[in-house]
Amino acid sequence: MTTNKQLELGFNQTPDRLLGRRREQRVARAKWWFARMRAAVEGAMDWQAIDQPRPEQIWMPGATREMKV
Image 1 (cartoon, rainbow, N blue to C red):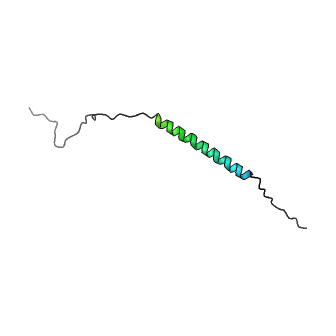
Image 2: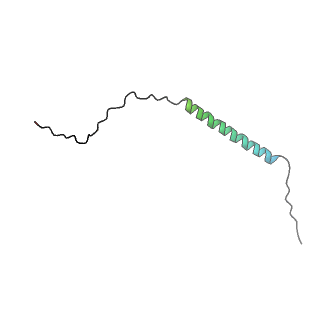
Image 3: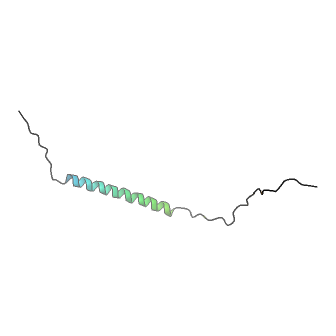
């Protein structure tokens, strides 16, 4: 005795609606993310450059610390 099992596929637009919903969710998440990034850029501080660098102590070759009197 053999039994035939058949897979039935429907065309009721269910998968398309699910894919459309997923796409809408992705678009909504992307809009949220880019809105957050724009807000971060707008709220960023503007750093001012220092006019003069700090003085730097260097060692000069050939210079000695001895003082002759």
